[in-house]
Length: 222
Image (tube, rainbow, N blue to C red):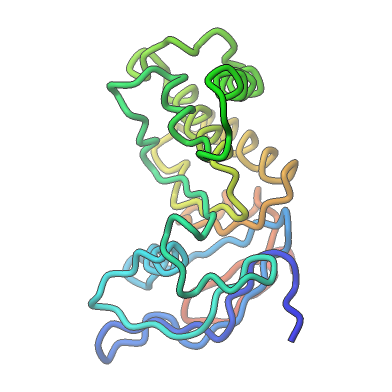
């Protein structure tokens, strides 16, 4: 069976004891597409992301398969899945400079101190933060920290992106700006993306399908 490019969840189910959090679900997310996952608290949105990452708690049981560009990652450890994730908190290391935070994400296959530093500085330039390499993360604004967090994720060279309420703590104006920044970089790199959010405006901006947990995946634009 030939699997499509992008992310494919094939007949995935997740349960907690007798409670079926996610009934059997098959979902395809095409390269560059953002599928939004919505539902009330406790319906399994973050649990689904944990399953994709390979960090599902032992209390849960799951079945099905995960394919990324036709590669079955279902049994792989987290470090081999090539999944990037952004959370509500930017999780920048406070004891490292901005540049060192970016260097931390670069794969070991990228050799040479100058080459690695050049890539980090290019990422900062792309984020409108040229010259911030030696800055402490604690001196950055919320929007600047969000941009650094995204560039750090992208430097890890992921094949898909998971967004777990990454805009939730931003005020309305900044949320719009950072959302556009994140979505533009996802589109430019053609990364299949799952977005977990409680805000329908995020789903509208994403412009892709909407998966309501407990219901079928639907096209948000229909």
